[in-house]
Length: 132
Image (cartoon, rainbow, N blue to C red; front, side, top):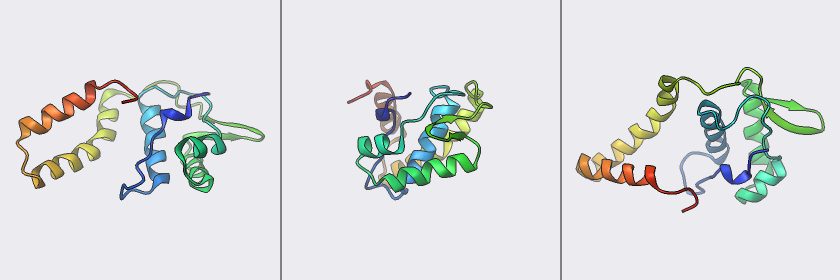
């Protein structure tokens, strides 16, 4: 079962927490971090780890189930659905990242940051160790 710390939420984000969770699960599946048959943390464990309402996690998991990304098993943890047995092609993963980068580029322009500084910051963030 994946560690609940695989997921993170930003409480002050304009994007609702349940949507943040959905996007993170999608990205983990697309990138191959979560694959078919991998169990998700329980609603209770994930809610506790993220300090959010369990109903928020439950809503995210329910929507992921409705789109076929996860499968509910009675009395057991939810798992990644069988059709997601490998990472998606790089082009598909880039498509998932593009909206985030478009927002970041717009903010950099609004802040009147030179592209070289914005790219240097992005490179630094990419290279930072997890957990910092």
